[in-house]
Image 1: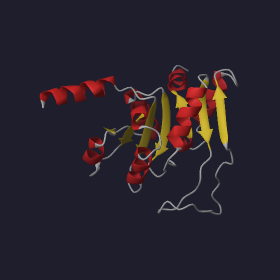
Image 2: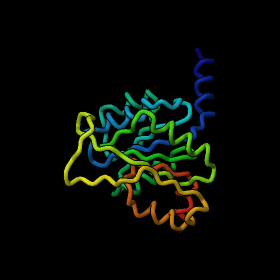
Image 3: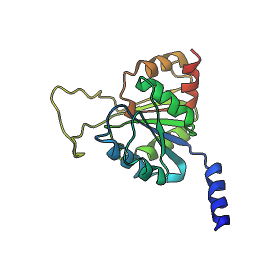
Image 4: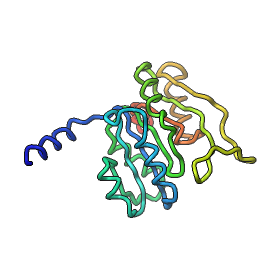
Length: 192
């Protein structure tokens, strides 16, 4: 029994995911389970990514998701941006994919993100389109709700200059759940 525990601890300490999914929840938990489940039910091998939930409240399901390998961070920062920074600091992945608590990933999202970043080592910022869903996860067309019609935006280290990429990223003109970035971009953003 002791050997199994030691082996499990060693396996955990060696685990270095390629992608870190950061799920943010600020003062609400209505759809948080759906967001987490969508991240856990990806077609990508679970050994390639980790899931981190950062939130500013206690939640009855913390132990349930923690036992499933989700890192749960309770953070009392006054704004979502600071919470995201703290979660990035706790993450291990080279690629950071964000997910808001009221959004869901399509099941193949991380497989696509993994493939595109692995095939393009100079890729630092990736944005993809989104679909609007209702509270039951069904696709809807909603009048007066604008979804940016952008199939994908791929930015490499040399394509527009790092400063322009940082401006795009920090201005948050795109939905967080549609963005995946290389850790390098976040680190460079901090130094400006």
